[in-house]
Image (cartoon, rainbow, N blue to C red; front, side, top):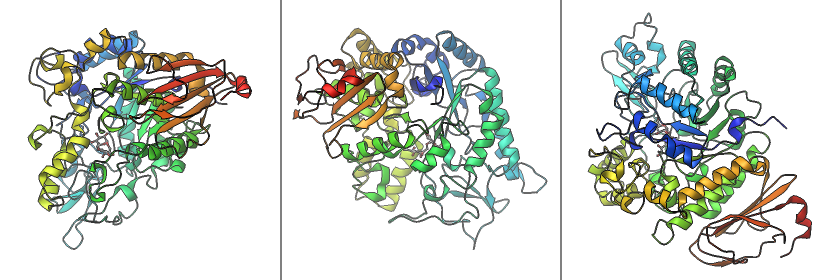
Length: 572
Ligand code: TEU
């Protein structure tokens, strides 16, 4: 058994700074806004804050297009604001991890500006990015960008194309160039000296492109090949991450989490191996990617609720995959996903509180490090008031809308708006709802993205005044994780015969001393189930006020705790 690492007991709170709290009333959240809300975060009880990118950026993609990795976006504040945020967080016992976005930079980054200036081989920056000659007068291969259109843009003066897996303003860095790697590692060490506590690494599974950049498979109805299929887990990705580990990560007691698309369990174990040779853990997307596949050509944008069976199979698969060999990140949502309670739960007034708590408990008793996305602790929902395309700001949603409408993939643009209302990334990015004052207490200025009108009922002030709130439920889950070793080290097991239950998720966590039995109803129906619970067991946490034993009410979750050796005296 390896020695426990600090991040194995930690809970992370994710902040999307533009939407958290505006301190200077320009309509955009900022670092001083976060400083002003540290007490709130501390009250929730989390250990770590993950900040989405706060660096200098033209902000084409929510700051995931960085023009200076060692400077702060002036709209969010200054470097001295950042230093103060770090110092004040540390004083409260909160660690800070930053976003590391190095698969690509912004096209306004000095490296790219020098790269595009001339193709003369004496220009060392040309090779910082991925440039290729046209093939038969066209793009070098058939890859499409994840944000619609081709993944190549022609630079007319030099006659070459550069690669961008995301927007054309996000050129991909050439990780095969050792100068690029060393520049990135130096930059990471510069942040280490500042005293940060780790990095979340954006699309890190995409950094090593396949040799020869071959064409990618084209899905039905698509104009371009999907590079996701062949770029993820490229030939040298582990070599580069081991080099990063050697030159940077191993020198610090950080936590690192890789965002990895296109992940398999075998690959994942290489990235997040417990031997510490690469990263500590990773985000994989399987459990958030189910949607009933109503319209395959729209991929993630089809709007059908996921089935519990799929989610369960995926969670079980990943818990087992990492058991004793790696470590999982546990999350329902982030800045790219719909709101947890709207997608996985039921955001009707009747069931919002119950289903948000059920989802919280189900996730927080799993093995791994849980992440809470800002506002999830309040049960913030998708914005059902998004009705026209002009209300959206997200580049992915806008590009998809215009491409779909242009290509007439859907019968009407209204269908696309329906899809966006369910799945657009802007659902997660609406401003944090603090109280019932103007703009939910987020800003006195009109916010950069409109506030969800449900803030009158759903806000932090209301939650803090209500002992039955979702906020206090999360607070309790976090404190249980800190107190009970079984939540960190217990073996995960699905309850017998639960595999095919499409309504209830029931599992146990067991260590030598104690066992937890988690029973969660994913439906709005009252169900009858018989689980064996030892006589002397205690109800550790629940979202109803009493226990009706075999009756499991709508979205009910209950967690029993008992001594592991009492299992033998079980009664039905
Ligand atoms: O997201 C990577 C990623 O896989 C996205 O394409 C994701 O699948 C999609 O946004 C879901 O709707 C990361 C960041 O989290 C995202 O915000 C950035 O836009 C992207 O990388 C590019 O840096």
